[in-house]
Length: 204
Image (cartoon, rainbow, N blue to C red):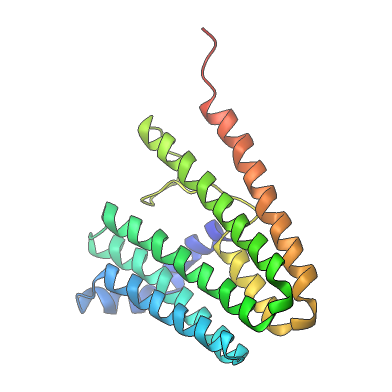
């Protein structure tokens, strides 16, 4: 829900560092790897009970993750491989954080397993719809990303909010987590209905 508004705001908020990185010829792919490194550091900190330090690292990693695409577009270095690398490393990062919370909350193993299952379904529906739209040469309006992500209840911004809530309210990790699983499943239904509307074959 928050990702598209945030994407429209990011160029204004991060314009100065983006221009500096472009002038310094910093590779967008290097920023993707840096974002992952910070995210793995965040997961390691959370797993070792340094929750707030881990959360801070996580939020910094998400800012770096936003920079890679901005730098790629500003410098004219956007590439299909860059888009592939970005989403692959993002899923490693999101999954690592779930594993970290599972380590410090072992009683919630089933919840964390269901969260991972939700991520699997959300990502599958995203990539399947994007791939088919690409095959049919159909572009969603206002889309300048390598992959044609479609809006949903569970996106990157909401994921970070859940991690903030789990850190700030550890006693509420179960209810927050099950609501999150529900939002992931609702996103799958939402995207499936959208796919049916966009991809249904005309009657013969």
